Image (tube, rainbow, N blue to C red):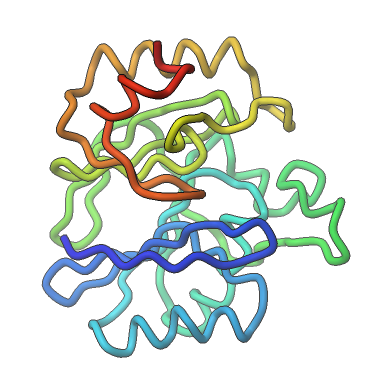
Length: 206
């Protein structure tokens, strides 16, 4: 799959547009303003048609553009069952500390671990809690969209609602046992990396 990365929002969150034969899947639409959403619209207009929005977790910076996507493209939105309440709760999604609350009005489709079929793409949904209790990684082939699970040289914070360092450590241990070094990691913030690289340089993966 071709992947387009657009970094937007008050905390520079990565939005990914996946292109599989002209069918587009948006992961974590981080557009907090109408002007930022135009960047998604521009990328979409040159590639194909949007068929779904996937969310790695429910924090405001990953969900801020959901309703704009639904309005523009009339597509379903998917989120893990445990993070579904984040969509309507600014205290959970962290936006209550900002000037304006983020509340998603679109009704999301809930999922749990296992295969998730979107068009002709089959994702393996891996539960990777710790940042939030419903955080997930979407894996397709050697591409892993990890949200705020693993960053280049670091990991997601665990001091926010439903986060847990102990749970994060278990998620990391399980992930390292289960997956191989050829995975390309697409994080919610910062640059792309590889699991093989993080095994070597990331202190949290030692």
